Length: 304
Image (cartoon, rainbow, N blue to C red):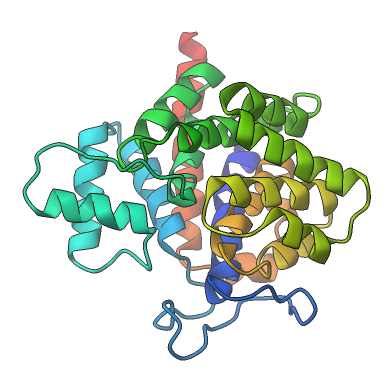
């Protein structure tokens, strides 16, 4: 299980770093190359080097570290997020997160999430899926964290769906993808329908490029999460899943992060390509965080 905890966080960060130079670009499935790349000049991430991650992994590490330190609550999360944003350290942040941070910068003492369906809240949910032995508690806590920035019910449904996927994958529940798809259907009819359709397209054998056009790759949870479900169902070979997801364009950093988190939770860090691990920013810090979250999980499990 420890190997999977580390793998989930590392896989997420690897996917994010692979997708980083392609964020907001057009899909590149016909000319994709394996490995980390540098963004083109003028790209919003142009200051980042190959192997560096975006704001998605920053949020994952932020919530994970607060949990590991035993200091997490929504107020501290909002304060730490605002601090990152105010000193310009948040890397090409989600527009909804920017709006919330600006709200806090104006002197508000309370978090004020926006009614948004963007996917900027998804990465921060990963540590909650790891730290809590009970799915209900992990999902509830992740949704509360999401509410700091995103108050839309569809965003909450997406969080619950993704936490369900990672939880069942970690615990080797039969058909974790189906379990998560059912959770999506129960939480939000539209999101559930789009995930169901994405899985049907994959089952019917539609080629990835055409499926991407039908499902979409924008920043909304209604496209980011369904295309991730399509990809994790289609590609079982780790380098293929990571490379294809990182070249979908649009919200490719988040799409690849979701796929990488699933891959690591499913197969452990040993399944992640060694060269990608070696070239990943903060690899040791991320691996240590996986250990710390596993320790919390183990203590909570003993208390149950």
